[in-house]
Length: 67
Image 1 (tube, one colour):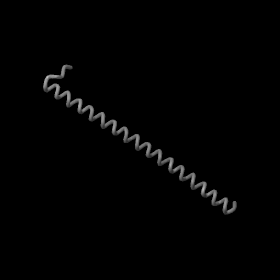
Image 2 (cartoon, helix red, strand yellow):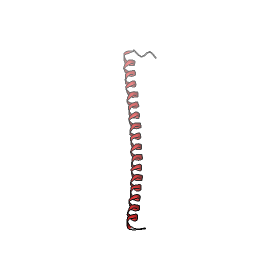
Image 3 (cartoon, rainbow, N blue to C red):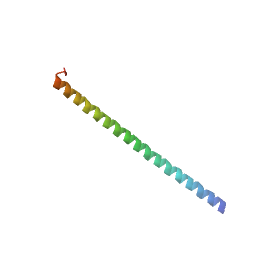
Image 4 (cartoon, rainbow, N blue to C red):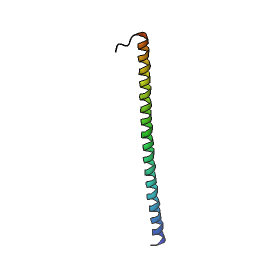
């Protein structure tokens, strides 16, 4: 293998490694985004449940809750 072929080979290896690293980073970012989405949905559901509980308490207090 001459010097030009060796340099080309090394460049190809470096490119492959960079692509693999970028792919791994994209996977990590995707996982982090999914986790954040799920956390936000859970927090939203908790807020909704608390608001419903508060509304029910007010209805009970004024006698408007007819369950």
